[in-house]
Length: 559
Ligand code: BGC
Image 1 (cartoon, rainbow, N blue to C red):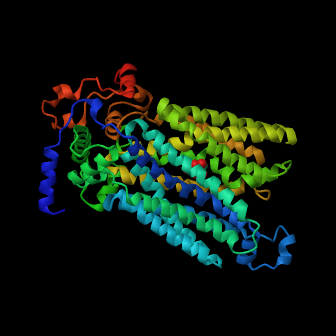
Image 2 (cartoon, protein in one colour):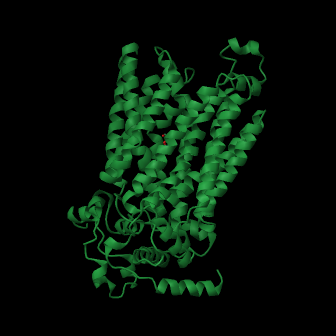
Image 3 (tube, rainbow, N blue to C red):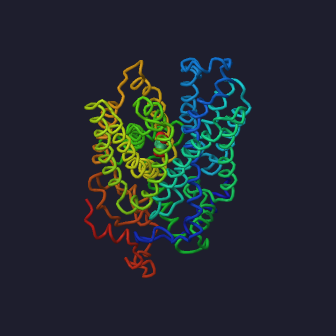
């Protein structure tokens, strides 16, 4: 930034109208603005589709013949007619490796170039990977294409959460981020349907069509985002107050000079100044090091938040959900008495899609903590029931049906609680100074554990390995009990607060009391930006209070 622009932005900050009224720190939002925020959720489709299509593709006859060079006559031998296990493992896990690295780098890029550009360039990278996979006629190019596409998916999956959490109005931020999870589930479903429809083709369309379809999602997202404003919080980080004001005005559907826009922006600026005073970052390395500062004992330290975000995503993977999505078909086949295991897998995918929208409402009505606590309990009960039946019986047709029913109920609990909940929380717990990196580390943790679980699960259930069968649910059930304890003791309630208020709340209270915390002051007034506007009757003293603020206010005292 040149010195002229710097001076202009200092002036812009100085002339911002700030508020001391905790109920006015966010501008009202128009319907169009709500739709703008919701569009970004589309990025979830990549995530789901990419994780979902590869199993279907690798099982296709045309693909097996093309990539192994086996003659048609080998088809009869089921043990031989397959992509070798080592290659399967490599191609499935290379995506997670790519996404892990992509997510880590995306955090940096999002701070340097902006959230929007990072998402658009990740889509570009993803498209390059898709083109390589479409062109692939051998295993090497297919694997390389998937690794490159993985970098793009990692970039999108991390930056979308960051972007959505930063632009969404606080009252529906949870619901909007939950719609990202809904798109993940749609992606998974679209992948199974695409593979189902092309699996019997006897030409390269069998794999090129489902692979190419992913490109369409990337183009829609990238082109759509070009018309969207950047996150105002990104501009504030770079001291571009005027640009931040314009973006915020577009996002809220208000005039640039509206007092609401000024007050919301003043709060973001004040919070940023507060954070920078606490933890200035001078070099590239020190900005990464900031994620691990503040000590383990302090509930709001950066280190604690980084551990919370990364471990929450780890716990989400520990619920065992991808056991059902990645290995469901094999598991159901091994149960023995099932006619069409593929159909049962489709049913679990459908339950996943249909249950997720419930969270749009519950995440705002009951909050993040309640969702995670009750969701974990629901999963524990279902998984232990499956484990008990699998251990105590021989698994006849009736028992198998009951097990499948409880696996579906378990997916219902995951999809309506931990699926969306983990993404919502990681978008909200980091202060602006480390938000992009915190979200990046947390997303990378999701992909890392996704990969680890994909690699170890076959050893747990493989007929030639531990062969646990339905007993594997003792492990998932116990891990879900861990998720219950984890959410009860460690997850803060962030519902209805602005990202800046979340910051304040984590400073002043602990997870178990966080639900009753209510804001009493704004960052703008703490930073001395409000003058005597606190007493300005137009800023209101509760008259403009939202239901959310009123209920927080009514429900208890600050701890
Ligand atoms: C998880 C994925 C999972 C998906 C299922 C996501 O939130 O991170 O690993 O496959 O939900 O819907």
